[in-house]
Image (spheres, rainbow, N blue to C red):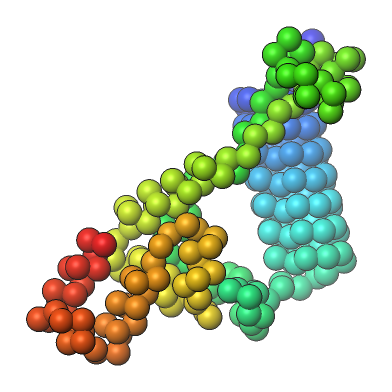
Length: 216
């Protein structure tokens, strides 16, 4: 039976776009029904990267929010950013993240698996396969996330890497824990450079230190 999808790799009916799971979505990589936008999880969201239902805006978690970056329900303003465990009075859109933060990544692989390819455990935990003859297997993609962070950082220019340390309340330990990028020593070098203490690092000039950091 024809699903009337427009796009590629959709699971469901009447989707417009690619990689949607559900019905009547317009956009890309939505999970749910009647979403308009990209990467929403839930139903009837208008915007991008919402988790929940009936949100209008971007990056909301919850339901029926009008605005951006809200967590909860019935909010109509833009939430302020909590970054590196510190609550600020800064709007999300005013923070200038480094370009290398914006790499393409799929956090989970979702695939349709037919009954004869299901494991015994998958059959036990997904009894609906007895009527549908298939289920959706979701695989976490943490290993690839580590490599993507490293690839993005390695390709970044020195100037773009420097933007990392200008983030509000930057904390190297938290950053390393989240991204797996070991930059604690890198941060110390940059900090000393900013403080004009390059002599303490036993380099002959700031230019020599910059060259060393760029190749670290």
